[in-house]
Length: 346
Image (cartoon, rainbow, N blue to C red; front, side, top):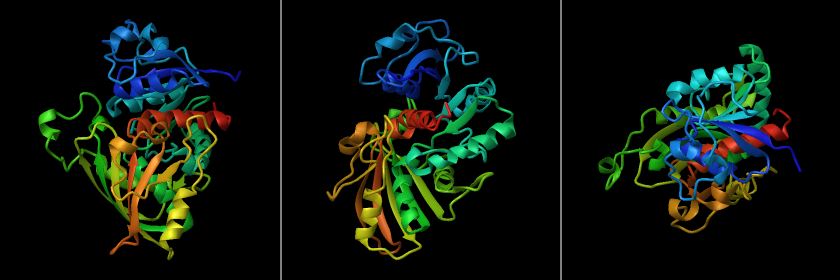
């Protein structure tokens, strides 16, 4: 039997923290040994401290774990962080400095030059940046790795396939984002029902810059961002789970529709426990993808692409869909941790 790594979860009672508990319940590489949350939860059994909101029952293995403060030391080998950005930066660096690998779902460090922003199938080589990070920040065993904004997952993977094969010159993306992306209790009912909200605070700059970092190249010192431009508009829509992106892309090289389809559909997955097969699925139905019908493909880890056609202004257009709290949050962080183990970094 392979070694099991002891896991601590920061922000364990929140919606992403609950997803971590759900995903790690029967994971062959990880066992949860520490749950940390705010002062009002400290000292209580997790079952008492956490108002469980997921459709599956609270895992038995976490119910009786006593919630501890969000500070080192924790009884674990690595930590998953689902902390709000208001407290994540200071806290995550404190844990990394104390020797813990920190796999973060927070936005706080994503665009720091020395922090990998990972989608493992796309840019696992960016982990070489960790040596730069350790030297710059004086870390010993600890480090910080992040996963992207949840909306990025709906369109960055097909962009990676196209950028590798043809080069991307510019992208226009409109996202239609689920209410669960706002956390719990999320968006007020009277704001979102019978409505589309054309503004999500801080979202558009993240969407416009994070894809450029993910698709950039590590030059030995830092990530050189990809040289294409991204223009984004982000909307909140009355969907529970699943972020949808409408994308138009201009390519540097001339390509046929068949070549574009092949580039996306043949893009490889990885040999990791949480890796979906396939990584990206292209659907031919004219009315797909739809969040309710397609978000759970590959246990919520597959990206679904549809309506892939030539465009009248750009070269091609398509619709992408990803499950925002699985592929876009907790599942992405678990996949990052699996990659770190495979690479011998944990």
